[in-house]
Figure 1: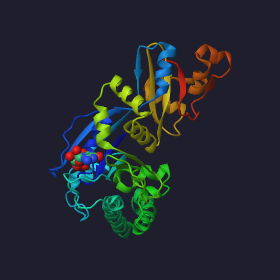
Figure 2 (figure 1 turned 90 degrees about the vertical axis):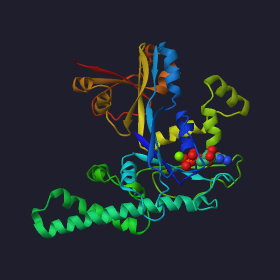
Figure 3 (figure 1 turned 120 degrees about the vertical axis):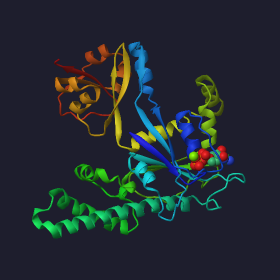
Figure 4 (figure 1 turned 90 degrees about the horizontal axis):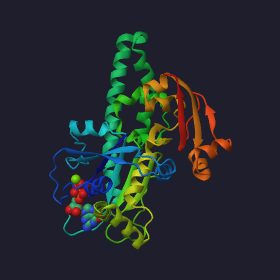
Length: 359
Ligand SMILES: Nc1nc2c(ncn2[C@@H]2O[C@H](COP(=O)(O)OP(=O)(O)O)[C@@H](O)[C@H]2O)c(=O)[nH]1
Ligand SMILES: [Mg+2]
């Protein structure tokens, strides 16, 4: 899963990217306006792995990961429908967005529209994306219609299936609403996946607060589905991300912080794109595996290895909470808390699974 960090120039995209990835990319008050991307893979914080590591005395701990891409060059033609094809292409390929909105005031960092106005900034980029989607939908509808005129009932079935979806999308976009607010069934999502509609992608809005937090700072009007928001101080978080683990713990204790905002962003991004983790545990390693919410045991087996899926016999499943409470696999078995599940079982977040398979 990959999320693209978007936002107006000087909103703090690269600063947030550094905070999330412990990166050290140059941030600058002067935007180059050049198209460029930085990409980095980040571990998804998961305390359960730490507990399991100790329980199994495991040699290795492997976290689920999520990838972030800092997408530079968004400033060109923003609000004028002027996004370059290359940029649009990059944007269409991510699974979701982290949209950075500037709240911080600064005399040294110019704002492209001069004043600080989070709601305006949010809507500027959002309507830009909306417009791009609308153009794509209208083009497609035109193509479908001309194909229908030409071939009538012999037209490609895919096009016939697509037509009502595109019409629904158009009506929705015409109302100025992002596609993410629609309920689009999985089957339809697959059919239109190739279009990479920008407003269909889930979004986590990050309000980049200034050095001090004022009440009302995190007030935004964006009441759509598949959207979430969080407020943080990106430059502070970026500084903290440069500390080694001991210093970071010390800082957090001193200030009574239980979780860094950057970690929360990573966790929220993970939830945002509708994925979750099942776990495997043994002496060799404890590990979190990423699967889509709703995936079956059979699909989960495939996430580990094709052979395990092919030879699937059954899954031995223990909810993490039971394992943590009872303290060991043996205790779980003795208490009858380990279940045998078949291929069709829908895996739950935190299931600790042993797959039995023929080889
Ligand atoms: N005062 C202040 N400056 C910030 C904050 N976040 C970012 N900046 C500065 O704003 C400028 C632009 O940040 P950058 O992350 O490069 O923005 P981008 O253009 O969205 O990638 C840099 O000079 C940052 O140091 C903040 O919370 N407070
Ligand atoms: Mg940048």
